[in-house]
Amino acid sequence: MTLPLSFSPEVAAARTNGAPIVALESTIITHGMPFPQNLETARRVEAEVRAAGATPATIAVMSGRIHIGLDDETLERLARTPDAMKLSRADLAACLTSGRTGATTVAATMISAHLAGIGVFATGGIGGVHRGAETSFDVSADLHELAKTPVTVVAAGAKAILDLPKTLELLETLGVPVIAYGQDDFPAFWSRASGLRAPLRMDNAGEIAAAHAMRARLGLAGGQLVANPIPEAAEIPREEIVPHIERALAEATAQGIAAKAVTPFLLQRIFELTGGRSLEANIALVLNNARLGAAIARALAATH
Image (cartoon, rainbow, N blue to C red; front, side, top):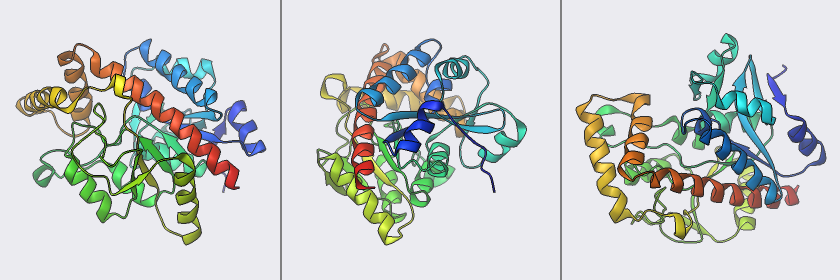
């Protein structure tokens, strides 16, 4: 069976040489920011991975193929696509067979990275259990993907608009290792601290890579979540961001916004309420995660 994978020349060369590769998602490009800021940020994240000694592999679906790594022209074309599908596990095959353009979420990026033999993926924040999920049953597919697909995901925790205690509880139930990097507190996306203790703590990339390799040796399904706190200079402290989150959530409820539309609405409102600071923080944390992802990928490549 031939997989519908297309590798950029840069990624193909890294695969041939056994060089470290870091997968990157594409919904941050198509659904996270307006053009041209989305393109500029994507280029910066890729440059950060390269500067840290690894090869970036931004993943997207185009013309019936999963593209593992995008050249600059293709990256710009994606950044200018206003109607790209937002792909998770449920949509990936349908997008491929329809020939449409699709941007990969955390779940779809994990699946694609694993198919391509890439063990490390850097993103912003994962999805999780939404507030009110006990009645809405709104839980991100990202959590179940972490329990199935053996990729180490570097994120600044789960998005702060979520129910973080329930998200951690479900990750524990699913057997997903949640590793706080360099601190005991589980980070909360824009903020370094959530007030919740992370189940595990590791202080260097080598430890994380060793745990990834050991899980493979033990035959354990699923990946690892590495919760990397936003740099201190870029964070919006909890006491400052929480009132904005609460207001945005109340507005979403009042307007009847639900399902996949919730997260984009909340992120846009929080951007407005913080005067743009939330987007600046978002960019800083993604760059920070790219650096750590590259360090883990380098350590993992050294074990092979």
